[in-house]
Length: 627
Image (cartoon, rainbow, N blue to C red; front, top):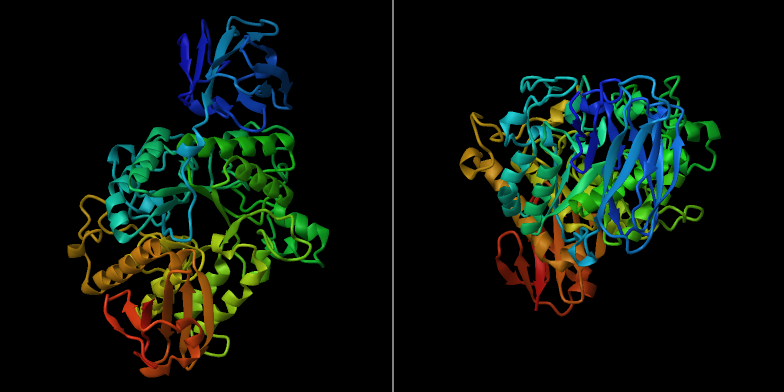
């Protein structure tokens, strides 16, 4: 082996006079340092480095003197290839490289030689340079990276252990979308009125099957080479910041892919049910159920999601520390604005509350919302900062608001009734008293796991417009799934892959390019313009984002509500009725008093505010009240 070996992580340097395959096999996935570097200035002075190297238990590790850093211990694991380097870092320590000398305890062959591991300490960025979090006036766009745009074909079939080649004809194959593709469409997204991006996971998924979805990570600190590199990810975020756009990273503290190095070279206690596969019961309500059997509650958090996703044991102190450091590292490394947390009900909830407190203490501006794919608002609210007696300890700021999603979908697909159709939105909003801050919930019409909204709306353009209007004018952090603006369709009955089709025009040679008006049909352009107008209203009008809400129960198929601040008022009128109606405005006088004009936000038309308002069949209206 060569005298100089470079780890796959750029911040790590290893030098040696003589290293052979018995010490460090040449493939990059047989040697890991986690975290790969560290940042100075965190509140916790402790740092635990997990070192994975061949037969590391046969070596002594000593730290060369470094001002401000103390080596507390070298803890061996039950796995001879893994150890823990535990450090204490004093305030005002300067950036630089710590050197660790690694020497054989007993030289049994010429293959065993001493070497030096260099570990970089970096300075945290100043508070004023940290990315801001989301506000309710932001509009997020969810991108499934493999299916959005292929900006760099050279990485399509990158050298991976499991060489899953690009095949656009395969539903669950990789199609070649990447970070370069996302970067190439930033101006398109900005023009659509988007101010933040959430990408499904982009870390390495070196799995033999279905790696395209990203949720079976095999290296938490590395961007998948088929998407790009760590540098390209940072460059993407930098380009976004130039456009005043923010990045949300999708993270998975619950599990990893079964080909992750930590699952191959595991220490005792790293994973739940490591010896015998046990699947979770997917019973998120057990976390709050006062009658839940303890075994049911434990199975929910400790069972594996699927057989290829080993379940982290967050009660293990090494795993807890590993996850703490991982998520601090990515915020600092990439200057993130927030995290979307996958499968939030399934990790250990005591640990998740700890993680929320840790992240928000270090980054108070950080946006965090957790996926709570449940059916009831009370269950959903129990996971966040809430007003429910007995659950005050929960620290998650917001959820992916499935309760509002189901309400939006019903309002656009089912008949109007006392509690049905648009009144489902009315009922769901009335339950916001459960949350300490419902404005931190991520609201959406659909996503990568459920049927596309235009299909749910039965491909009715009026129902689609109603849904988009609801999303952009109700409280929360609105999020649009890629392709919604061009009326993409798909249902999940056969497979989730049917809602993850390629964005037309994202690949060279595509017969149509729906990133451009010329490539879209007249109906698609009408939808695109509708969404663009509402997106830009959301980002520019305080009332639609941070404003308060006053709602009136739906009558005769028409639902009316107001968003308002001290300086701005907006009236939203939505109809499910098949007939045009003229509604009396006297019902709303308590909030409209003092105003005499209406500006239609979608058309720009200004009309007098009279005693009645004509509402077209299935019409959707957003008015700014003017004096």
